[in-house]
Image (cartoon, rainbow, N blue to C red; front, side):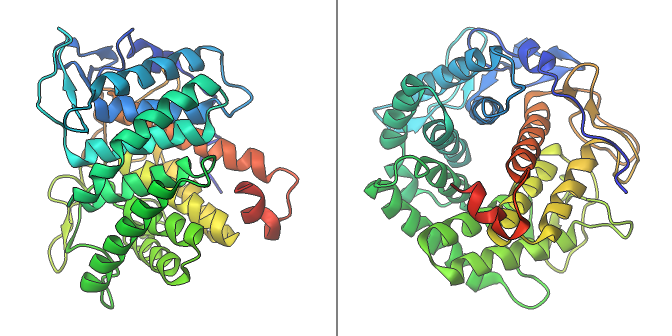
Length: 365
């Protein structure tokens, strides 16, 4: 039996962390840490959250204003001369880097794809589409598997509406082939994975193959994604049946010692998202149960029995240490929880009144 009920949507902390420029990166407890400014990574995540929240009936009107702020940040971050995004912006509104990381760029592609594929507002779709098309080609030069995965998920979202997008499909084929290649090179019995280590945003790699293989009709690609995700879920499940994300204090190298802490909210979120995608693809209730288990990690069903989500503020603590929670409520963690909540609510809303064996088809329409 689940130990907690799903909490009500509370956007107070999200709004508190956001000003007219965008969402601040970090917080000291519940207050924005102004000295560390903003980043494209978090504003991309925030745009995804706002777009998904916009599909919920109970969403307040202020979500549309937030989406416009985060979308404007991405437009400002893009440098047309290099076709790359800056990442770090200081409080003086000056960029602190020449260009952001490949992962930052991939997250921006994911966010823009979501805005094109899901936003009900024509102007938001059009602006996001133009930037998506400008920013997409360069990702074929990237070497980061996570940047490939984020981009693939963004392409999948983009093609929800732009079904004839030839460029997007060509890039999807290229990046999908790369993920398959590294999986086939590394995976073996007992280690069904893409890399020699489990590090961060792990489930996104499997998630990308599931959506791309299914959308392109490549069964072998889809099956690799399911295989990898099933293995990852097993690795991340404790003897008590709870989610135990790979710890950031050392991660987990094949044949090495696994780090159990610090456990990061982003790992719970990516697991939820990937498992829900597997549920949509298979209609197997086991995948929904794994998503629910990962969601409950936020609510106290974890190694320490501590709630990471704070219903009073609407924020999420920045992680689980070996002996306590991190009391700061930064952007990445709060967005990880809100995205998880939005995805759980959306699939529950879609499933209402739908026969289980028809669920996968109904959700993707």
